[in-house]
Figure 1 (cartoon, helix red, strand yellow):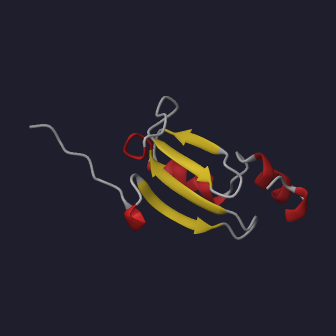
Figure 2 (figure 1 turned 60 degrees about the vertical axis):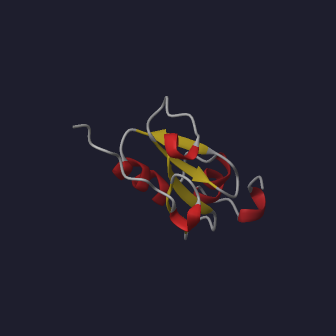
Length: 92
């Protein structure tokens, strides 16, 4: 018998696993199950998304997605903030 995958729908949003405000950047970072959210899963079935700037990054594991969400350097605008810029220097 095939194992059924967990259905993610935090706040009734399809595929949403978790979301929180990043302390360093102030941006809202979310993690989605790519297929359940209707996102491309070619780079991995888990997706970290910067809700403020729209950048995203696919991952092969949920653990990796959570680690990248904690330090969102994959988001161009958040990376500017992390490396000494101010929030107003980042693209919004």
